[in-house]
Length: 74
Image 1 (cartoon, helix red, strand yellow):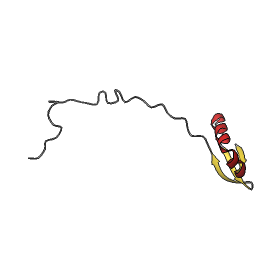
Image 2 (cartoon, rainbow, N blue to C red):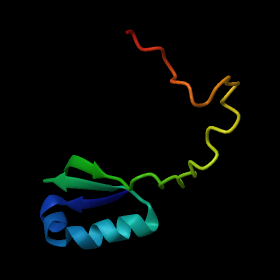
Image 3 (spheres, rainbow, N blue to C red):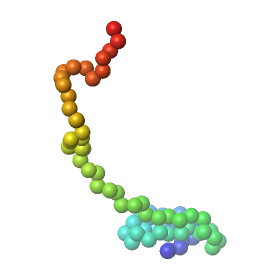
Image 4 (cartoon, rainbow, N blue to C red):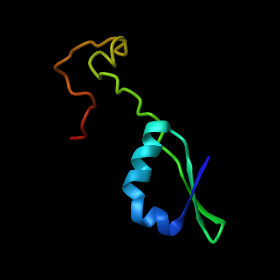
């Protein structure tokens, strides 16, 4: 795990973040040698699946598709 002083991180944070994203290695940010925070890359985004066909096979049956789903009170 890489370590960087807080003052150095403040001056070069964009470069540090870009490097962390490339090598996927967390960075520990320290102040006077004590760890303050750990910056870690986000997990890879999962590819979104299509919603087309997601409900296929979920309708078990219907008598009249034009009738209201519920009976309304009079």
